[in-house]
Amino acid sequence: MKISKINLMLIAFVMLFGVVVSCKDDDKNNPDDPNSYRLENEAAIDKASIAKKQEISVNRPENYESFVKKIQQFSNKLSVEIGMKGTDNTAVSPLSVFMALSLATECADSDTRQELLDVVGITYQELSENISYLCQSCNRILDHDPERNPNNVIKSVNSIWIKDGYQVKDECINILTSKYFSDVLGMNFSETDVNKLITSYIKNETKGFLAPNLDINSETVFVLLNVVYLKEVWDYFGEDLSFTKEKYDFINYDKSTTSTKLLMGDYCMGKAVVTEKFRRARVYTNSSFSITFYVPNDGYTLDDIFTEETFAYKAKKIYSDDKYEYHTRCLFPEYKASYDADIKSFLQDLGIKKIFTSGCDFSKLTDEKVFCGKVKHVTKLEVSKSGIEGAAVTAFEMDATSAGPGQLEVVYEDFVVDRSFIYVLSDSEGVPVFTGVVKSIK
Image (cartoon, rainbow, N blue to C red):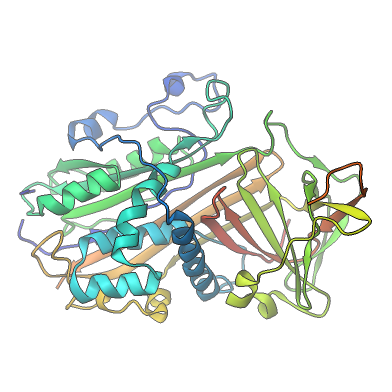
């Protein structure tokens, strides 16, 4: 596929976790609807379309559970590598970075591909067998009645933006369109404000929630882009969580305290996990997404518990004993977290080396010599009484060269998140969407 023989910069992947459904919603021009958003530059984006993604139904692979566990292990390593850097609340998207590396893996070959696979912890066969289902599972309405509330969604939208005249290989493009459900778009990068169009594309797909400028320069010849957004509510009816009547003294990372009311999650069966250093419990959303809270015990800090061992700690869930059946409710604060940095050095520390050198092999996609110069990761996450909304961007820039109720006494316990904490936000099958730390609240 001929789409220039010029210095190459590849923005390999962008993941967005936003708050609304696709830009194709019928309510986009309704000014009275707070969820509506008027599309920007839609005609120019549509004009650039060469081929639409293939829409197919994918069965759940037999080894998907094992695949997800390996994503979780990669998430643990990435989260620990990045999580405590900085002084503010952080949100890292392991799913975003994983998908970015997966697209890069699809375009790479030989040692470059193998190194990416080794760091992520999967084989190419596992990636090939499971990636379509992972993409499909990130494209669904999060409501038991889609006609009632189609705005609660997790959705993944892949696209490939190719500079006119640049030579890429059909086989790789076909894999990306068929397995990653990618659109293909082509345009004259010299005569078109590509930054403006891609920003509009992202803004449209998130209904204005996120509009990053990727700062693509004049030497860019193709962009691999993925947009994923997430909007989720706490219960079936979309009702807000209630606050506690009393205020709690939340202990911030710097030892200061903030007096605040806490959100009251629903009771879930089982006791909270308690270890010497930390305690752990989770709250669920309408569609079984979960936020797992890791709270340090007295005498310990976030620094003490932010380890791979903490994330990987396995404990048998206690639902009941000879006398009692246990139910636990999380009381937790509203919070916001974000991140904005080049994570190239973190990925290098994890073992990804070749893609950042002139010896990088991207020959599955192009015969031009390329290497990655920067990996930008930008996130934003808000957890409130109404639900969850968040966004994450990852950009690779490539340059040239138990017993039932009634039999046991039921015990209701509260798990109070009253100090700085670690969190993991996962989908219903355990795929980590966001993870990070909350060091302070307002």
